[in-house]
Structures are given as C-alpha cells and as structure tokens.
Amino acid sequence: MIASCARAPAPRCPVAPAPVAPAAPVAPAAAPTGGGLEYVGGTAIQAKDPKALSAWYNDRFGLPMKGEMPGGAYGGFEWNGTSFNIAIVAAGGAHPGAAPGTAYLVFHVADYDAFVAARAAQGLTPVSTSSDDMGRFATFHDPEGNEVAVWGR
Image (tube, rainbow, N blue to C red; front, side, top):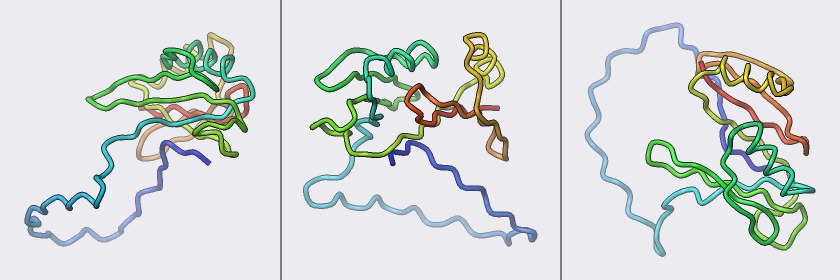
C-alpha cells in the first residue's frame, strides 16, 4: 500500500503537563554512509489506464499532470519550498511503482467547503466525511477505486 499521509489521533491527557525546561539544541545526525535522504522523489498510483486516471486527477482535483512517460504519466506541484511529485503507472508493469497494492492520498486544501462544493458541481461527491481536532476530511474514490481525501478547515 502506498500512503502519502497518515494521521493518528492525538492522545488525550486529563492532567496538565508539568512545565519542562527547554531542551538543549540537538545537532543533526550525521548522514549515513552513502548519503542521506534528500526529498520525496514521488508517489506512484497504479492504474489499469494511466492516461485516463491522470486526466481524472488533473480535471477533477486540479493536480497538474505534466506529461507522459514510459508506462504512465507524471505531474505534481511545489508548495512552501517542497516538491510533490506523482506518477500514475500501469499496474503490473516492469517499472518502479508497479508493485501490487492501492494508493491512499490526502491533499490539504485552503478552503474545504469551496473545494467540496466545486467537486459536487462536477458531479463528484465524497464517499465519506469526517472531522477531528486536525480539521475536516472528505474521501473520494478515483475511477480505479483508490481513496483520495482532502483535508481542510
């Protein structure tokens, strides 16, 4: 299973924590031999029809799909100095990201109500909604059955 966002509920504490002195700054760990991780290079979603599924994400969610590649399509965006790259690849292909499984994606939206209303105007309604201390969530299924959620306030 490919997951781009996991959220666990914050633990509840009935007693206020005692004040704690600030910790001394911690030096960054040395990079492991051979270098360390630099960034997330991408997330892959398997598809029976990568071209059609990439069009769905582009048209319904506004996820900029930028082109085709052998075995699929790619796209993404930058936010707050961080790149988010996504590939939609042929399921069962001989390329990275083709291992069996499903995808679960969560995208943050600035205006939850406006986003959900705009999808409804396109005929796309959430299969479920929920809310917690972190915000509100609307979960949709893409045409291949993957769950894709939006999170906002």
